[in-house]
Length: 570
Image: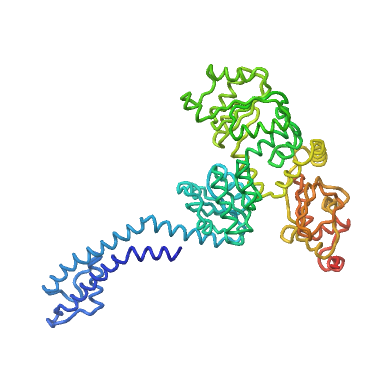
């Protein structure tokens, strides 16, 4: 790209430079050939340097006078001619320089060159995000706050300008380019070893599939996170090796199903995303007749959940675009609309779901339904993160914000992969199992436990890793002990344990305390803040680890070295 920029400059400036050279050459040669007179009246001729010096300040209109001696009339006549010649040539060159600076093609090449240099300087693992919108903005904000490096590509130049105005720390390199072209992905650094994932969350499923295939062809090792909203497209993506596919409608369908049939599984999933570990009264869904308004992709997904749960429902097929054309409005609730709800059985329905693509229609559906049945439970689809306050004011019982759901799931896959696996595994359990786990978490930690995940490697668990490498046997129970009193236990519960052996990657849900830890294993842990601090001290510090293992203090210095004899690898 640097060579492209140089070529554009040379191509555009070759004629102006040639004009300046020719005008300077003519002026200098003329001055050198025309004889002058020195102070004593003797004939002299300009040297090349004197002629070049004079023409330089004359052509640029600076003007230092006649040097080294007063000019003769022939010289002055020549200077009069060359003034117009060189000034015109000089201003022609300046005009071309100004035009070159404003040239969009050159600006584009220079921007690409700067972007590529920024990508080359990134030494940490980074994520490529294609497209900048409400969803990816939330993902970028959360990842950037944790120091995870992000690279953004979007076709719209105004969105790239928005990113630059955000002033992210660390910097988020961004460029305007066509995301469907392989060259763009190469510029964004998909070939680099530290490129870990590509996020593709456009509205167009076909576009997403095309980009996902290109990513896999360009770098088989990179994780591709793709949005897909149809069964056919999801199957196609799986066939080409995409292992993380985001379908917001399926996510909502599963959530509705579990909230009705297995609320504690739903609670555990929501807790992973920040919900308190308690089901509020208004979060228990009714189990009798539902009305679904809007029978598009979301409506079908919710209907599928109700069918799986064995719940009666009635669907009203309201297409927001057709509705607005017909009514010349986005306001729902005239006599025809009320009759439609009455025919659907609004009076004896326990819940209404407004699931159209138009937020205003969804709000007015909910408002109209409440007037007809004040006790009805209300669920609404919110299509954009920009209208949250309106839905809060409407006092809707449950709001599904598609953009936020998609952003949280994508963030979780990148930043908390074990938490993502935990959700998939608990979906295979029953409500009793989930209720027992919630009870165990509440009894061990409290109603608002935190969770985090960690890799037990040299960087994150220095002391523990070295002890394990030296052949020492350490169980999970040891890591639960308090560094203040080794006989007491911290408020810790291990949710997931993952390791690799000769058979590949193994995952254990709720591992037993007697499990022997392997170096490099990964843990998903629930705890409170104090216990987390204790845990991190223990795995990173030899003295703390020695104490919780043996109940004895390790003496610092030379005495400690003599007493402390780590086991040798067998």
